[in-house]
Length: 281
Image (tube, rainbow, N blue to C red; front, top):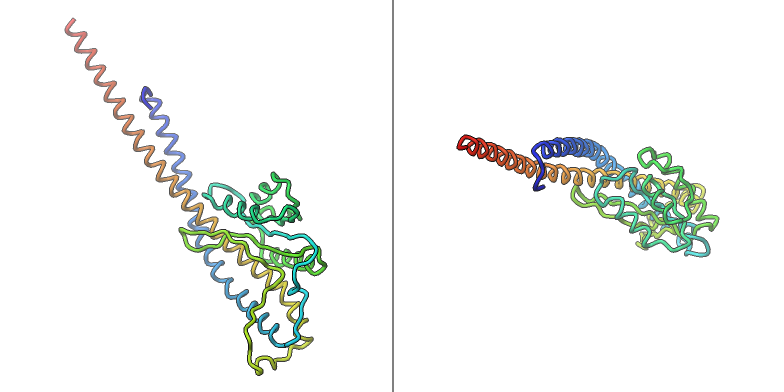
């Protein structure tokens, strides 16, 4: 910044201070949203954990248990449900999860995007998109998650899709968010052996019918949980990014103030020198 006038430096200081106000405000908003998102993510985990345990119990209730949701992959495409954010300024949050999904996807894969950034990412890469109905991730409700779950479950049953994979960001902590790819269908049920007393449980309508009815509910619960995890991850990443931006702005302002003081001191010294030189003449 050598050679800048004091006026130009003051203008830059004012501009940077304005930028810092914006980044600080965004950090506070992200912190506020993070608390509620983190609470939702923690609260919904027991729900689909209980459903998964129930499905294991049902599957193990009969030695001859079968379900179309347990079949091996056959003909059909793989569908990826990918969750990212609606906006940027969140560090590597969007980029990390989208790159993970794109790196794993076969060429003929179908994408069901959730979030504006997801839609834009796969549009630019000419990927087959099932629907853009969920372009706004912030407006996706738990009811939408169950609708998506039924859509992909029906597609799996009629063999339109051979695999269903969910890609989202797992909220580990305020400082760590990890993108993850979770296979949803076909289901993998634990091979844990139960006692004859546990096997003796009888399900009205048949264990297979009950199991098949629970699967879409389970998928909807998993999807909603992943959405909550991703939302919490996005807010945590944005909070960290805006905190770093605010600190950088503080450092730049400090350097500009130092530059301003030096320029002002130099101008004063030059004026004094000119006055002394003029009085000697």
